[in-house]
Length: 288
Image: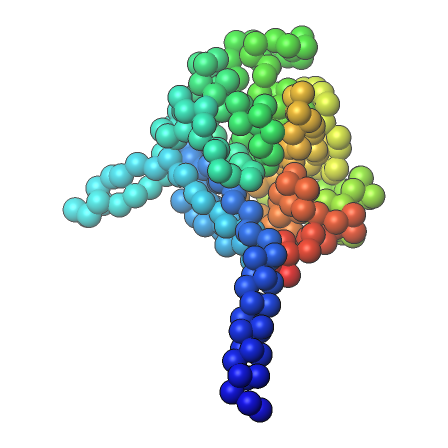
């Protein structure tokens, strides 16, 4: 082969590779918020990051509300165990700028300032999708929230975003999960399963949420069944929102079935999930 022909081939191949690289989808930027009382966020934030990044072409960036304490003369970082975790997003309505989706995994039941709550909701009102896990359902509430709220009630804005109103849970006992929306790409092909001992969240009102799965729990001889996974379209921009109340204990969060559900919910919320439940081209593991 002549030198000129060889150089032309090398240049052509390089340009072709550059074109392919330019066309390859960039990873979704995911903001994971974690912290607050009652859960092992120190471990769970990393479990979620690893599990989701293994299942989809995403980069998960974490904001974790933590604190330090002394143990045997050594400073260690531990969970912020309060209901008002010091998340730096509070007071900053632009906290999600540059991200494709926000995962709310915080437990901020003591954050009651309407102005702060409005700031947390602002990115989702502007169209940034949301994924909400477990205790996120019991955040950003105040006043008499234990009963059904009138549409537009000031203390119900977070519930409007979620599409479902929950206020509490029963004891930790196994939950039998039944996927009810068989045609939804989020749960298509999933087999029903029973968790370890977990918390079943109540349903005060199902607002605009669309049910994906129910959970049934037997405690003290009584059966209780509620919606445990659903989708919602929020606000005038019909922002996509996925939520599940499952996920209290580490063993559940690291369960492959749980991580599959959360990852599919995230991909659906960003419009990157095919109708058959597979990631859209370029958004599967390793960019496949």
